[in-house]
Image (cartoon, helix red, strand yellow):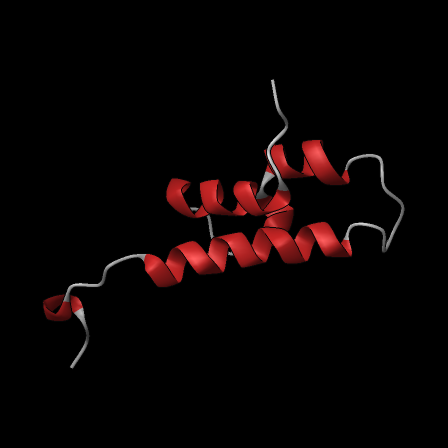
Length: 68
């Protein structure tokens, strides 16, 4: 089975309803961060955030649900 990219984990996290906090995504941490030293995971964290954010921006918003 192909391992998901950090970006794909971010997309999945958004769809699961997780907040935009990659450190709270246990599956992502296990797959991409677990064996790294401090500072080595920055690129993976940034990709996760990019995936989460892009998916959030593409999500439709109902105008009636916006605060007035």
